[in-house]
Image (cartoon, rainbow, N blue to C red; front, side, top):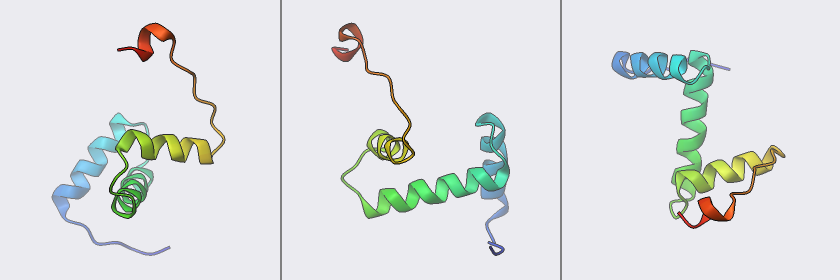
Length: 72
């Protein structure tokens, strides 16, 4: 583990986002770093696809949409 220097405005954004997302500041920064790395490594994938892959890798069962929502 180390210290990462980031811009003060970005740090403020991380702090605000962490409150909205119920994460610590460090957890929010780690989340954004991880998603950013995955997005750069897989440019053809959408954010939703990346999140589904991460949840599947963590063995999280995702509910299936009913026919009325799947068609929307």
